[in-house]
Length: 287
Ligand SMILES: [Zn+2]
Image (cartoon, rainbow, N blue to C red; front, side):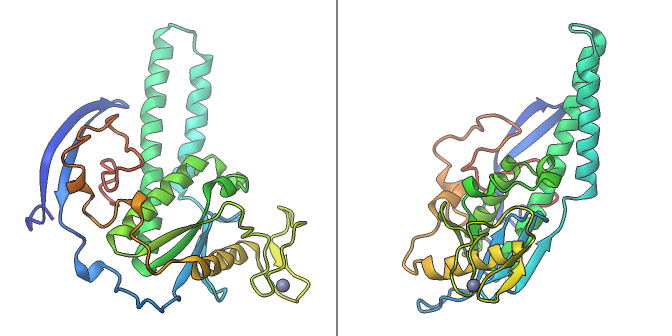
C-alpha cells in the first residue's frame, strides 16, 4: 500500500521491549479495496449468518443456521504448544534461582524474550484464523465473552487464554468492519450450547462431558457445531438491517484518520489498546 501510495507513514516510535528493539509505524491507509469488501445485502435479506463458537474440543467451530459446518480450527499451532511447554520450564528455572543473583537476572531475561516470542506466535495464529473467517463470511455471530469463559477448553486453556479469545473477537470485529460485514455478539444469557436448534428446547442438564447434543425431538449434532448453529440462528433473528456499523470496531478503515487528532501516542509501546483497530505492529506477516 505504501508503494502504491495508498498509505502513508505518519510517525514512528522506537522502543525496547522483551530484549528487542521495535519500530512501530503509525500509518494512515485508504479504505480496503472495494474488490475485497463484501457486497451490500438487500434490506430484506436475512440470510448468510454464520455462528462462531469457542468449542470444547476445538479452538473454534463455525456453522450456518442450517447446521452446516463451514470451519473447524482444531488446535493451536504446534509452535504455540511447544512454546507454552518451554515457557513453563523457563519460569520454573527462574523460580529456582537465588533472588538478586546474576543467574536470576539472566533467567528473567530469557523468560521475557521467550514470552514475547510466544505472544507473537499466538497473535499470528489469531490473525490467520480471523482473516480466513472475514474473507469468506460477511455475517458472523460470536458469543458474549462472559459465557465462553465458563466453557473453557482445558487442553487449549494455557495456549489460548480467555484473553486470547477476547483478542480474537477484537480482530474479527475490526477486520469485518473494514470489509463492510457484520459481527454480532449474542446476548450473555443465550444458551447456545444447551439449546436445540430444531425445536427450541433448552437442555439445562447438558454437562461438559457430553460431546454430542441430543434432544427429545430426535435432533442430534456435534455439541460444538450445535452451539455454532444456534448462534447463526440468533444472528438471523436479531440483526437489525437499519443498524449503523459496529461502533466498537471503528467502522470501515477510517479509523486512522479519526484518531489523527487525538491520542496519537500508543499507551504502551508494543501493545495495542482495545480500540486500536489495525495497528498490530508486531504481526506484520499476517496483518
Ligand atoms: Zn429438539
